[in-house]
Image (cartoon, rainbow, N blue to C red; front, side, top):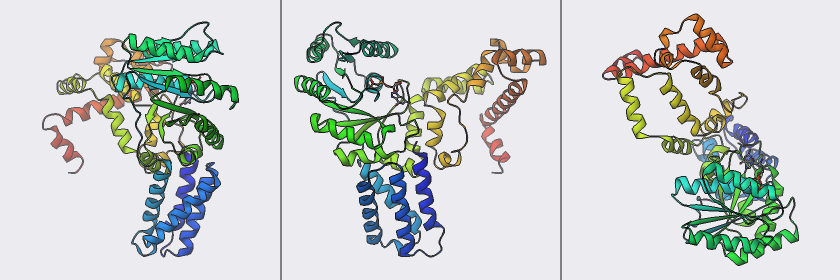
Length: 440
Ligand code: GDP
């Protein structure tokens, strides 16, 4: 995420870090580089200029030149200002209605339908809600089908009316249906066009007026940079929406939209989309995003994701198995599955402070565990619990069956063996051995 911008900002701070004595000229040069980095990331000219002016004022106010570590203080000032620019605190969504009505707006292809599904899934699994999805795109039957497919994937009902060409009526009927059937959130997906046009704006404005949503969300593709900001402005002028959803942040976005949108429309970014899967949704925290942009990682999000996947019951079972020396490849497989649920590897690595930059040029596979899983799946249940019984012939078969090489199979077995030894050592009193081993 935002690799290029992170890189350039890092270089800008090098100017300060590289000098023994910090002078006003160094600070000015750094800020010039920061501004250039923002412009390259497709941040609007005026926003970039105001940004550096504010940081400069603060730097003067805090007497940056006389502090012990001016480089670090400058990074902090830039981080604070980035956070402020992106919205300060995280903005929640209003779920007070009975049912809560959420209207989705945005251009075609922005990711509206996908996000409607993600939001429904998020509210269902994380907030214990019973959402209803509503298909209001009367022009494209394919769009209605797409929402049904999404609803099927996440087990959420989809309301649609075949043949009805009046989106206002469909939305109103859907809300009645929700009330009568115990749904507490209604998410209305509307028709988008390829570009802003008057007819589309009128249509969504009519739906908006008729159903008086508790939340009107504007969905926009982050990859479109300055265009995203302009589209946001056009929709906000008509709908006065409550929040922005930035999608496709997993792609090669330059970051300009994320940084500029709040200050142009004065509405917070509420969620971000980071992939095509239904789980690829994150609450937007300006502070955490600023830290990621500056290569400070996002440990808080990483720990939160791990906690979400943490199952106490499972952990206790696992501990017993390790104690009895029964940890096998099946347990290993289920551990891998837990990690995978946390998100794609590239995203996770980006949350580790410094790692994003260090591993920038390393190709990280989306499914880094693919080979390991294939190898384990090619083993018999008995082999999975007692890998020691594997002979050369079986190893060759397994390599063939999993589309890997015998070296890869051997490597995995070796790693597994080392891991088992380590686990044994950590058990009852073994911690001491480990400490000794590590020279403690
Ligand atoms: P709509 O026309 O606004 O309803 O857009 P769709 O929901 O159909 O999305 C358009 C395309 O973008 C689809 O191929 C989606 O899979 C893809 N998409 C949506 N959100 C994301 C995202 O966060 N990341 C990525 N990589 N693709 C996305």
